Structures are given as structure tokens and as C-alpha cells.
Length: 243
Ligand SMILES: NC(=O)c1ccc[n+]([C@@H]2O[C@H](COP(=O)([O-])OP(=O)(O)OC[C@H]3O[C@@H](n4cnc5c(N)ncnc54)[C@H](OP(=O)(O)O)[C@@H]3O)[C@@H](O)[C@H]2O)c1
Image (tube, rainbow, N blue to C red; front, side, top):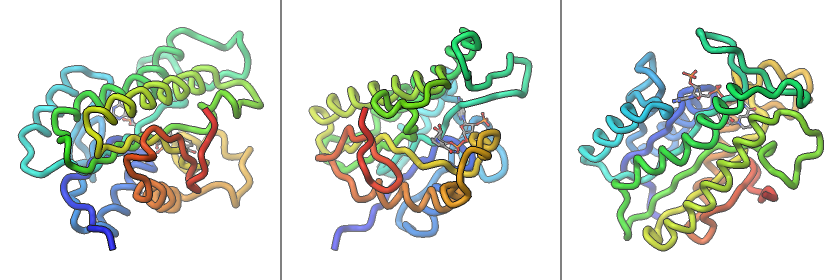
């Protein structure tokens, strides 16, 4: 039987799936010290980090470097598909080219593509060559170029495809420098959260997962991968997704 996972586990992104991942890890892996990280400190959030803010990432990195626990697992569960609040212009997934807008392209890129790579950069000083470590980031099947059959959603699709390239590239670098590290891109399946809410009428009820169910699937897949699978893009059922 393999050793239970122990050390620090960070779940970054305190949305629907992020919170469910943190709860499931706490319940099923008591040897892990699970820390839920959100953009701002609020109910249930242990540490704050805004992945779009260099000073916030710097402060987060310093906190991790000072941490006495070995870093065992980091899951990035942040993401952006639509936004209607605050002073910034609203973001809605595009149905056609004439709806494409630079602000939305940049905003989606910042969260869905740049943020997972900058998070990896921030945690890297805490990795050790001989210590097992998993970094999983939530991507989306719609980021697959091969699987794109319906079009639309330019900003989100393009940014998730860019994330896939960034983390595949990272997996090759870490394979040389941290051979015990496993980098994964995971698709959770359509899950009942604020991100999918406006689009759920297109989803068959049996295909819409609760956040708890999605978290269970994701952790099952994640914990069954090792360094030989680093750089994989996998769906909730463990099946590879074509790039
Ligand atoms: N739900 C689905 O059906 C589905 C399907 C495929 C893939 N996914 C992917 O799964 C991941 C999790 O999605 P979800 O459904 O849980 O969505 P969600 O409930 O909207 O959660 C996304 C979280 O990301 C956080 N976030 C965004 N920008 C951030 C930043 N700069 N710094 C820190 N946190 C930030 C948001 O915080 P704020 O509220 O403060 O912005 C929010 O809590 C995403 O990558 C999404 O693309 C979801």
C-alpha cells in the first residue's frame, strides 16, 4: 500500500469547485494540512492571493517560503468565463467574431492562462528535487483545439488552450529539475457553480455535476497520476483529452 500524502496542500481559487476540493481533501486525507486560498480573506478562506497581482503573489511566495511544512500538493481552481460585477466592463462568452473585445481577451488570458503559470513560478522555490509533488490546474475541454466542434467562446477557449501549452512546457522543465513532480491539466466536467450557471440550460441534468461530485472525480484522477504522466490533459473520468 502506498504512503498517505502528507504536508501542505494548497487549493488556490475559492469558487464552487475550489471549496469542494478543499473540503474533500480535509475529509479524506487527514495527514494533509489543507489551505484554501482566495483572492481576499473571507469566510472559509485561510490565505489570500490574487493571481493577477504581482505584489500579492510575492507576499504569498514569502509566506510559503517561511512555512515549516513541506509543500506536497497545489491545485489551481481559479478561472474566468464571464463577469458582470464591479466597475470593469462586463465579460460574456462570444457567440461570433463581432463580439470579440480586447478587454475580455486580456481579462480571460490573465486568469485562465497567465495565472496558473505565475502560480507555478511562485511555488517553485518550495519544491525539492527528491520530494514528490503534484501541481494540478483546472483547464477545460473547450480549450482543446482538436475537440472544438462548435466554435464561439473565443476568449475562454484561447486562454485555456494557452494554459495547456504553458503547463505542458512547465512539465518538461520540471521533469529535468524536479523529477518527482507531476503537472496535470484537469477538466472537471460541467459543474454547478457560478461559472457555468448562465449556460446550464444546454446541459442534460445527469451531465451536470455537483461541486462535491466533481471534486471527488478530480482527486481520484489526480492521486492516481505520477511523474510518468506529468504534462497530461485529463478529463474527470481519467480519459486523456486531445490537445
Ligand atoms: N464549472 C464548470 O462547469 C467548469 C467546466 C470546465 C472547467 N471549469 C474550470 O474549473 C475551474 C473552477 O471553476 P468553478 O466552476 O469553481 O468557477 P467559480 O465558482 O467561478 O470559481 C472561480 C474562482 O476563481 C477565482 N479567481 C478568479 N480570478 C482570480 C484571481 N486573480 N486570484 C484569485 N482567485 C481568482 C474567483 O474568485 P473571485 O470570485 O474573487 O473572482 C472564483 O472564486 C476554472 O478554471 C474553470 O474554468 C469549470
